[in-house]
Amino acid sequence: MIYADNAATTKLDIDAFETMKPYLLEQYGNPSQSYSFSRTVKKALNDARTTIAECIGALPEEIFFTSGGTESDNWAVKGSFTQNRDEVITSLIEHHAILRACDAAKRNGKKVHLLDVDQQGIVSLSELERFITDKTALVSVMYANNEIGTIEPIKEIAGISHEYGTIMHTDAVQAIGHVPINVNELGVDLLSASAHKFNGPRGIGFFYIRKGTDIKPLMDGGGQERKMRAGTENVAAAVGMAVALRKNCNQLSKTQKRLCNIEKKFIEVLDKNSLEYIRNGATDRIPGNISLSIKNMNGEMLMHRLDLKGISVSTGAACNSGETEISHVIKAISVPENYAKGTIRISFGKDNTEDDAIIIANEIAAIIARR
Ligand code: PLP
Image 1 (cartoon, helix red, strand yellow):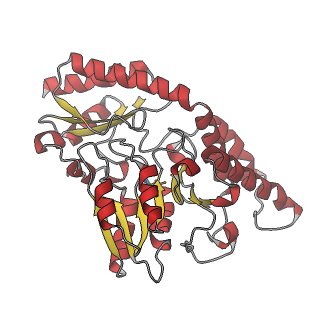
Image 2 (cartoon, rainbow, N blue to C red; image 1 turned 30 degrees about the vertical axis):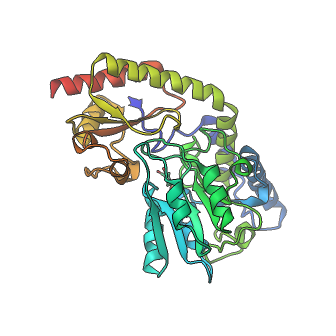
Image 3 (tube, protein in one colour; image 1 turned 90 degrees about the horizontal axis):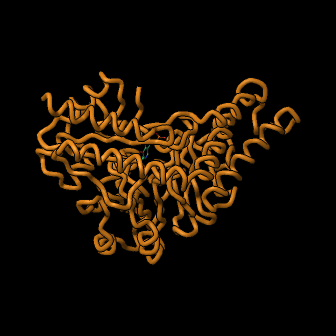
């Protein structure tokens, strides 16, 4: 089996798993209790918070544990509106966690503006400048797109947002642990992350809230996470997430180099077979992400044929798989229809090898030749 769908989820890191085990079996105290049995657990949770903060240049008190990217994105959208600010600006190519949270906001009477992107998937800064006002509560633009890997000009977007006193959020789910991220260099106020995209466990993530940012809690309940996120914390998962993030960040440049070589090999083999395809996304993109739109192909069929050979890739975003229609991202970047229908996403991760790339590229070529 070759797994090449790392943008959908990644394999749990073994060190992360080993670190989690005691917090599942022996250290099961509730971190909110003050007796000694819970003290080790509370310390582990706060150590995990500190590690995560260090990895992104934040303060530990700016990190809040959530159930993942979807919750963090919902929190950003739903928590930012104020009496005087009832508008959100985001982009056409955001993940559905943002787009559907914006739909919900719209149903509650808020205004939503979706920024256009160019053919590489880069958001229009001039459009942002045209639409932002002092009524804009939030600008939310993803750090890197999950389908095509394009990295957005977040620093510039944060700069424009702050000129209007607007909160700037970035969904960095695809980027954290894959490219260096420092919240202060970027100037963002809010950031979403999800552990299972960087070899941590599924069902946990974090939300970065810059100190002083005016945002309301999403959940009502107990006083956990400094009264900002109710619900007993998933300590084992938080600890595993911190180990995975630290490890990925320590190996970042080495992994990037490896993935760059794997990508090169993959494209080399495709080109040797003279395939007619468009490689989607900007040149500045997440390492290992290859979105291809192949002429006169059916992406869904290609995915299933590769599956029969034991190869896992995606036709679009994982959350959408099963849908055969052209994804909102591929539509937004205006891929011609006879190419768009043949879109697949291969996303290599740190466990993949150049041999994997050669095998997948040759299989794609063979399937197309047999068509
Ligand atoms: N945002 C982006 C860009 C994603 O790629 C994903 C997952 O595919 C999410 C948000 C949702 O994250 P989670 O699966 O942790 O809810």
